[in-house]
Image 1 (tube, rainbow over the protein chains, first blue to last red):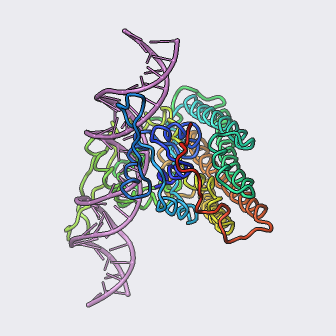
Image 2 (cartoon, each protein chain N blue to C red):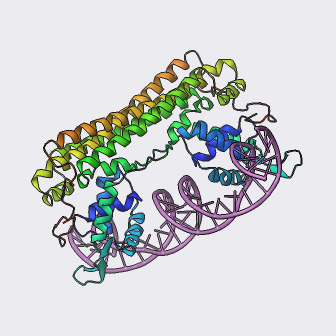
Image 3 (cartoon, chains in turn red, green, orange, cyan):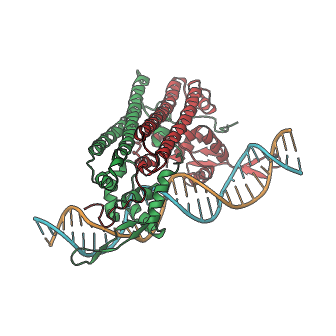
Length: 218
Length: 218
DNA sequence: AGCTCCATGTAAGTCGTTACATGATTCA
DNA sequence: TGAATCATGTAACGACTTACATGGAGCT
């Protein structure tokens, strides 16, 4: 459901094609809500069916053999978007493969466990750097999108508009930092546990010969 | 894909029915990977088709008019599980409705924005409390599941087994704490921004009259 | 007789991924 | 002429949700 609102937020700034939206997504929105271009095109068609946006097909190029389909937001689209912003966000159930796996790292070798945490840390370091670069742009009001948004709003609202976006991105940075700290603590944990142990054999023997006839719950 | 490995990890401890798995999920695994019982049943069937588990249908009750289907793990199942633990976890694309919405809170009123952050904080406070209770149990090795797991493993591995689980749950607690701090900062932000402003009207006028003919990207 | 728990599913639909497919335009 | 970019999609599949559906077992 969120994809359509991410799209509406962009289309609200002016007519936009699926292609342009896909590009904008890759540049900025992807930090908060990523989407493939194929999904964007199909979602736009569905939104058109539901009357949230209107397509105005345009000839493209000099010979006009191709067309593009810029979408403009409708009143119903504006209403749906603002309603979404104003209503409560139901909490999403937690589902995290990295943490699930971390729970069972005794089935890996110490070396593999360490490597998993290293990758986790590296990923979030990269992510944090990207987010920080983006916050920088936001604070200088130097993104195309933000400029458009501010231009369309009364000056007395500008501080709030920027502040909400910066706050969201700072939250994601804090989250990445928490992940980095967690991964680092994981590395330290592996180092502690593996003192004097064999690094390349599983912590727990893989062919566990437990009683296969006993049920999990009694 | 992760659901099946969460299931395999449990079935590895001994034959288990879908019903039992659904219960165990609700008690503990749900903090890391939640699943509906309907999904568990269908996934078990698929795993059976693929030879990762074997069902041994059993009569149930004295009259034996009903059956249950405990699943036992196969060698292929054990191999698939350990392979999953040992291989790299591809990073998941970020997709968070709360943060997406936080980016556009200027379309809500200050009061609504504040309320959103309050709910976010409350949710993660509850979650943190549950996770902390669970870590307590883990550290005392007082959960049914952990006892079974330790009983099936050599004593010299016990510290590592417990430590990995505690580390994962502590990571989730840290994450909840980060969310709480973020939500609190959001509340403070709203309080600052709304000084001397109208609390119940949108920060940005909802009927934005922007130039509808200008494209988003130029 | 009625309630709770045990136990197992199906069906329809949404959301998202990956791969495939096509062709025009622009510029060097 | 060829490459990059603009531009729009379809098809198949996988993961998950919500709602529906059924009925036995155990206990009071």
